[in-house]
Amino acid sequence: MIAQATARLFAEAGYSLYLVARNQSKLEAVADDLKVRGAEAVHTANLDVLDYSQHKVAINAAINTLDGLDLVLIAHGTLPEQKACEQSFDLTQKEFGINTLSTISLLTYLANYFEDKGQGTIAVISSVAGDRGRQSNYVYGSAKGTVTLYLQGLRNRLHKSNVNVITVKPGFVDTPMTSGMNKGLLWAKPEKIADTIFRAIDRRRDVVYAPWFWRYIMLIIRMIPELLFKRLNL
Image (cartoon, rainbow, N blue to C red):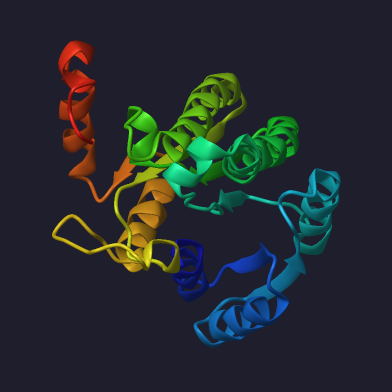
C-alpha cells in the first residue's frame, strides 16, 4: 500500500514507472490507475523476491525498458507472528529471507549500477522496529534493523558517487499487513508515509521517520538503560 501510494505521487508528477511485484492482476490494476493519474508510461513485471536468481534479471529488464534508472524504491516485506517464530527457526529464516536477504540482494545489484552511473537515488523502507529489539517483535525488528545498518554502510560507500541512499522508517501504518491490529493515535495512513517518502527523495534526505514524531519516540526508547529496558513489557 505504501509503494502504491508513493507511485501515485510520481505518476501525478508525470514520471515513467516500472512496477515489480508478485501479483500480476494487482500489478495491472495499479498500472491502469497510475496511467489515469498522469504517468508518462507504466511497465510491470512479476518477481518473487525469494527467487534471488531473478533479481539481476528483473533489474536489467527495468534498466533496458526505461533506458536507465534514476530512482528505485524497495518497499516489500511481511510482518511475522513473533510467537510462531519463537517456535520455528524455519519460519524465522523465511522471514529474514523476505525482509532482509532479498532486500540486500537487490541492493547489491542496484548499488553497483548507480555507482557506475555516478548518480541516482535508492530509497528503502525499513522500520522503527529496527531501532531496538523488543520482546513483542524482535524477529521482525532484527530483520529490519539489519537492513537499516546495511543502508548506513551503503550510504557511506555511495556518497562519493553522488548516489543518495534513503532509509525510511515508518511507525504503525494502516495496511493489509497490520489489518488484525487495533488502531490508535500513533497510526498513519499509507498516503501520509508516501508523502514523507516523496519529499525525502526530493530533498535528498538520509534517514526519515514517518510520521516525523517517531524520531523522538524511538530516541526515548533507545535511551532507556538496558537494566530497566529488559524489565519492560514492550
